[in-house]
Image (cartoon, rainbow, N blue to C red; front, side, top):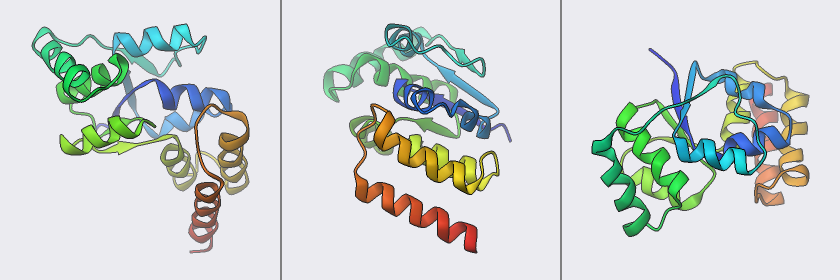
Length: 164
């Protein structure tokens, strides 16, 4: 089964900020809509070579309008969710709470940056010390809002996983 993901801007920006783009190797294929590509460029974040820009077909453009107007999502998030509906990936990557809630309503499974790092650790793309270091650096060196309580919980689960 292909391990495809659609991403919005956040996870790519945050993984770039902490220098951990290799965590994206947990996916065989990552696609983003044109608006996310535009947001990455505005943010001076290069599009990783693993990430491909995919057009939203015209029949899904109404979904984008509906999501921006009725669900109050930014255009990048709305396009990424519409692309998820169109391409049916295994997962949608977002750190945005509203985008997560809308995705859940639509039956789309989501992961954020923390989940990507945890999975990269579980799949042995990064080791335990690197996983803990990068989780801590999300708090100190990235634009992701993350509480120290969540950092502690994540580090605890990394330690539990490596002891099992």
